[in-house]
Amino acid sequence: MLLDKQKSLSQPSSKKSASLEDTKKSTEAPKASNEVSDKLLLDVLSYKVGYMEGTEKQKEKSEPRFKSFLAYVPSIVVGLLFLGYVFRPVLTKFIRPMGPSEIAPEDINVTFDDVRGCDEAKQDLQEIVEFLSNPQKFSALGGKLPKGCLLVGPPGTGKTLLARAVAGQAGVPFFQTSGSEFEEVLVGQGARRIRDLFRTAKERAPCVIFIDEIDSVGSMRTSNPLHPYANQTINQLLSEMDGFLSSEGVIVIGATNRVDSLDKALLRPGRFDAQVTVPKPDIKGRMEILELYVSRITHKDIDIHKLARRTVGFTGADLENMVNTAAIRAAIEGNKIPSL
Image (cartoon, rainbow, N blue to C red):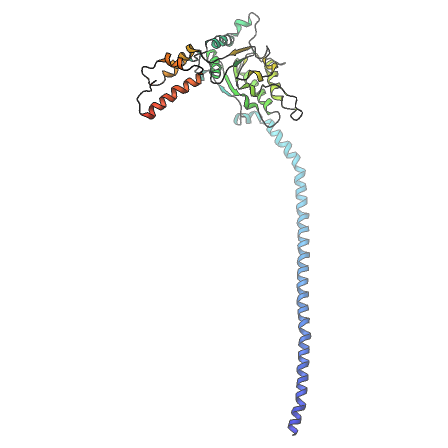
């Protein structure tokens, strides 16, 4: 009995001690979790503070370098411009801007004998050849070399061939360019190219400048406020052909099939002194052209007169293409010679 009473007395005390231990553990657990969270907050805050201090130091270091670099930019630019100006003659020998192609007299193998079907145009251009070949003959009488000649005619009639024949017949340098080469997006580039062209031509005078499709650069001037610089190129061309500075010995030959669109100031005497019409060849001219091109292919018993009568309205380019097509067709079909 006494033992049972002691056991009963000891059981509530053990229960009390267990409950006390549980309460201690429950109170210690939130304290530990609070301590961990506080440590994490401190770590995050210290990281942020350190990152912000680091970025501020980097900014402080980079800003002075950038400012110092900006201080040297004007002097660097001025130095590069000065060096480019000093070494410009040397650089131009290696870096040449795109422009007209110069053909030396010895490289021109075209004369008036190679031009067929436009006898009247050749006769008109023969005067220019005499001016170029013997200018003293006309200057002794007080005459001046013509400034320009305009070749007008439909496409394919041989305007470019005639211009080359003028230079080849006279034995002078030949500058060939197109009107579209003076059209640029940047303002002033077209006028600069014309100045460079005439400056080079004057150094090689007497010479011939041939501008194909001159209507693309010499069309009528406009007064559009949206494009105030649109007339710079044609104004420079007008000034070079008959301006304050003389361009003696430089003859400009222009070619176009749209003479109505050209500016009137460009067509006046003193700039384009002569206007030569290059029409489509007649039957005699077509026979001469066909004889020239047929002689270059293998043929036998081709009636040139019959071909000329059947090709009314053909230009020289059309006749050349017809003969070449006949030779190609004969080769495709396995024939030894082309037939009519």
